[in-house]
Length: 429
Image (tube, rainbow, N blue to C red; front, side):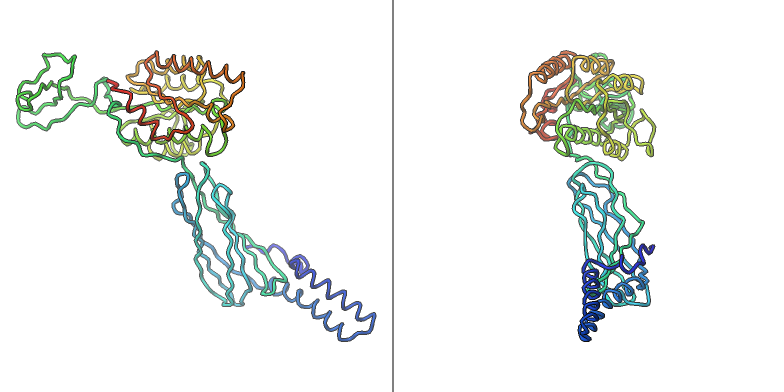
C-alpha cells in the first residue's frame, strides 16, 4: 500500500487540530502573562497531537488483504457473502484500524469494522452479507483502511487496489413442464415414444393419434399393448426455439426492480432456463437483434444456460421504436420450430412483424404485458396514452387471429401464474 500523506497537520484529525490550536494559544497567553504552569500545559497539548501524527506516520503498516465474494453470481434477492482475509506484518505495533469496504448501494450498506491489536503480527478474517436488489454487474472494493492512534488525534487513510466482481442475475422461477408445448423434431412431428421392444420387432412405435395413416399401424405392438400403435420413423430430437424479449424503452413503464421491464426480464430468463432444461436449443433476441455477451459467444448461435443468464443480466433498455430489427435478425438466423415472446406495449405494425417471425413455425407463444398497470404505479392514463392502448389492443387481436397463443399479463401476476395460464390454454397439437 502507498503512503498518502506525511504532513503532520494533514494527518491530524479534527480532535487533534483543536487540541493543537488550543495548546498553542494557551502557551502564547501563558508566556505573555508569565504563567509557567499554564505554559507547561499548553506545550503538552501541542505535543500530544504532534506525537500522535508521528506515531501514525511511522507505523509502517504492512497489511495484506485477500478478498472474495461467494457466490459471485446470484439472483436478485439472494444473499452473498463477502470475505476479507487480513494479515498484518511488521515490527512496531499500530493503534486502531478502521476498515470500510466500498460496496454499491444495489448490494446493501457499506460494511465497516474496527480492529485494535497491539501485536506486531496478526491475522483476521472478516465476513459480511451482500444482497443484490438490482440486476447487473457490480464491483466491490477496494478496501479502505484508516490508521489512528488510541486517542484519535491523528489518522492516516490507505487503500488497497484489489476488487471483486459480482453479478446479480434476473430472478429465475422454476417452471413446470408444459405438456401442450411438446418439442418437435426436424421433420415437424412430436417427439416419438420409445417402447424398448426386443428381437426383430425392435422398432420405434408410438400411440395412434387421429389422422395417422392406417398403413403405419404396427399390429404386433397393438396386440401387445392393447391399443393401436403406429410405426414411427427414427428422427433426430433437435427442438429449437427463438426467445424474444421486448427491450424497447417506450414499451415499458416503471423504474427499478419493480418496473415492467424487470418483470419481463425475469420471465424471459425463466423461460430460457426452462426450455434449455427441456432439451431445446434457444436463441435469445432483444429489440435490436440477437443478445450476446462479447466474452461468451457469437451473434445468432444457440445459447447455453450460462450464456442465457449472462445475456439477460446485461440486457438494457433499447431506444428502438419497433421490432423490425429483431424480426429481420430472427428470419436471417437458423430456423426454429417455436417462437416465444415476452412483449410490452405494441402497435399494429409490431404485431405484423411478430406474425412475420412466426412464418413456417409450428408454435408461437406470447406473454403480453398490460403496462397500464405499471404507469406511475396508479394505473391512470391520459387521453393520448389511451389511444396508444387502443392500438395495443388491436395488435393483441392480430396476434391471436394469426395463431399466436397469447397470455395477458397484469402487474399483480407472478411469473409462475403467467406460465400456468399459458399451460392451461389447451392442446397445441
